[in-house]
Image 1: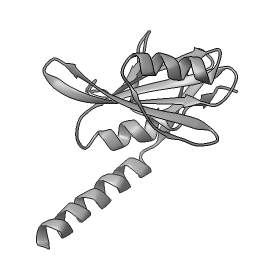
Image 2 (image 1 turned 135 degrees about the horizontal axis):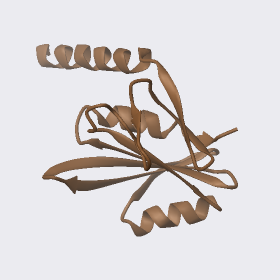
Image 3 (image 1 turned 45 degrees about the horizontal axis):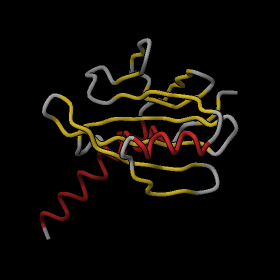
Image 4 (image 1 turned 90 degrees about the vertical axis):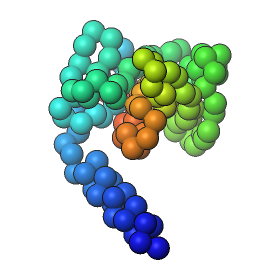
Length: 137
């Protein structure tokens, strides 16, 4: 029981910290995601300062094309609603296992956010950032 209470307290603290950090828009190829304000952009992606969590954006002509691209790269579709399709994959870089969240908008054109984080506590941040993807207006 004590371990559960401690785990719940840590989860609440992590969730509160993630939800109170300021978000900043990152726009590329006509698509937008909201990332923590301290993330740094390069030519190809935007990343947390320690570069352990990063995101990239891509625009595709249709939702189906973006989803098919991710499925061909071994991503697995985990959910779909009226606005987005969510896929997940894992990849190993430098001996670490990373979780990748791929979220595709149901729009024309479609936007694809790929957000990668080390397996573990940063996965929640990666998932929440990926789900902010929209067309830039």
